[in-house]
Length: 346
Image (cartoon, rainbow, N blue to C red; front, side, top):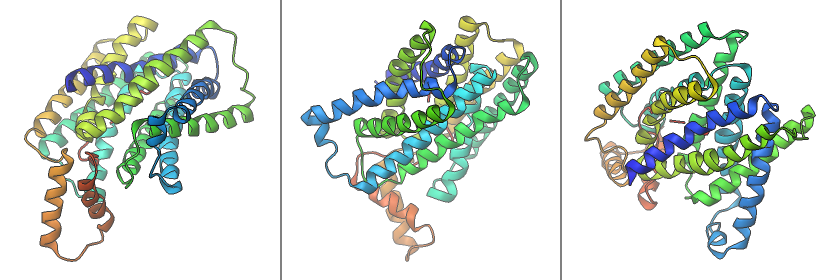
């Protein structure tokens, strides 16, 4: 079942980059994103209020919990997607954007140690280094083949990657276990408000009559949001951040091949070599994490309690210890442990 979920997640998340490319030629980024989220927020809002099961999932969540979820949505949806779509609008290929997005594992791994006290093995760091090398090779190839793309456009996807990293850490530190439907509803409503305001300020409220625009909207809502975004948080809760984020290295090959076949984007030997490094990175990271127990919330919590008992009084890492201890009272909500994450949701 986990394998099937992983395959579905990779395909759905990669579809977001393709959908962004579909809509890039018909409307501005904020217009496309506004019309992606407005109907989505309306549908999710009606579902949340109309069924007893949906209403029950909101019980126990206070204003602070909802505000935190709004913050997660602002980072993981609004900030992330705005930068990814804008990069593609500027001319960065969908495959390169996906691969830059796949460097999230490095940042998550680098921050997991100081923020959460979770170790990353040398083998895993080796794999992550290979992933970065792959990003450099593919980005260089894309920049050499592209014409009319400003150099700083290749920095824009990194901002989106950092936004998704921040969203992941913010969600992991939440004490309240908001269900997927609650999270998706709050995130969609937050993003709908943000992009509507931005579109209004830029004069982009009116959608174009172009059929490709609405094809892109339907594509993004069904495949990317419900598929990619929903599966991202589902796998994150079931398997941990290491597994779900390592899958991000697979987004680039899938997206690059998809973009080459669908849009004729450049795909030469250098691009293939860079993507090969990304695939090798996946294998190395998984090998380095084999037999580790960090991704299982209950086992990790027991290990933290043992270390806490041995260390005596709380250290300056009090918030991290507290978050890990509270995880024993909740369903598996593993904290970011090693570099792997994100988005499709592109």
